[in-house]
Image (tube, one colour):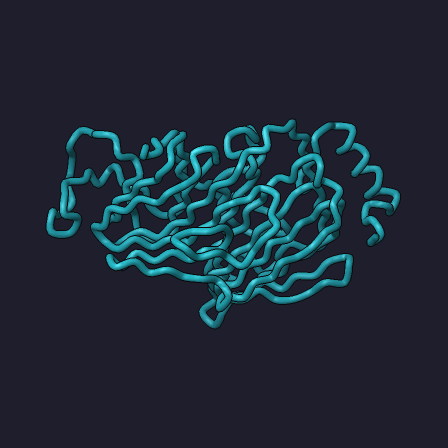
Length: 303
């Protein structure tokens, strides 16, 4: 077994999207090789309705899949094909945009004004860029959760892990998408296919993901962690960790535990041409999509 080294640790950057939604972007519109097959990851956790209530009005998607995971609040969605619904706390939506869809997402906070969640974009291979759009809406109660003897809990959104299989299937990137909590002081390893790219995103507490030796500094109490760990090595809220190659990811949880998403997928290794929410393989395909948006032929008839 080999533990994946940490290639980079970065903090999500505040940005504005949609009709005026304040969110934090962990990555996006970057070198697509970095997280291939994943293109963008947004953290849209907000506690002030003014920061999110204007939402994401009608906009196009083509050539990608979007994965929305709601923690608190609700997201009402609709599209040009007549689909509509609402995602509540703990719910997942996996949308395959495929050949093209016009889509809107309008967030609403809970009784405390909280609207918390994440959206991940996954690329589609060239052979599936123009596939028919489809949705997979999954309620929180359908997502399996495994709790280990040490208190570690894992919600399996997509993929197979610890003998359980997530409810979303038929995804081109064949991803693993886990919501993990590790209690204070616990050292834990999570197996990942060696040939997949992988990242973690911390959103509660803090943890140390790099197992390489570091100079000693201010130390956490041994009674809490069971070993000496430099506080400065801890990755906290809104931190993205990109991993190198290996077949396991290791984390040591901080004094309040750590909760993070662990995501991996098989890289496509294909050229990427990008125009906002339209992602194809060539510039000509992008130009074609724009022409179709202008002349009203972007949405393809169902076969």
